[in-house]
Amino acid sequence: MSRSVDMQCWKCGSELKNLLLPFSRYEECTVCKADLHVCLACRHYDSRINDACREDRAEFVLDKDKANFCDYFKLNPRPFAPKDQQAEHLARRKLAELFGESVPEADAASLTNPQSEADKALAELRRLFGDDDKESGA
Image (cartoon, rainbow, N blue to C red; front, side, top):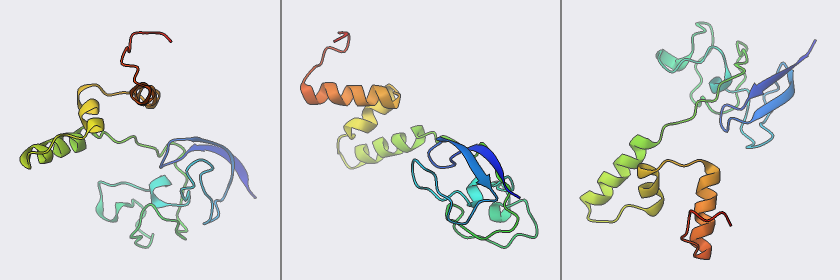
């Protein structure tokens, strides 16, 4: 007996509608093609504990982001966790300064002014077409 569920992709955060449970090992996100029957999309997944699984009877899975055959898989409908990249950008800047290099343009902009994907795309278009006037509405 199967049932239909809605969930969020663990990798890209896209809303996936009317998926049939139980998942096949080969079920994929329609947007990013990430496997869905993975530890990262399971209710038992917990990165704070040993083996990252709260189910004692489950076998150890090395690659938590790859499809597996775990019989204890229970769907987590909201597994997506956006990553804060501020620390990564800061480390890149410090490394560049250590070797006397300039900070990559994308990293420098994100450190001083975090932007949405749409804002980043608009800024890139303006850079490509030489439109430096960010205040204009055209």
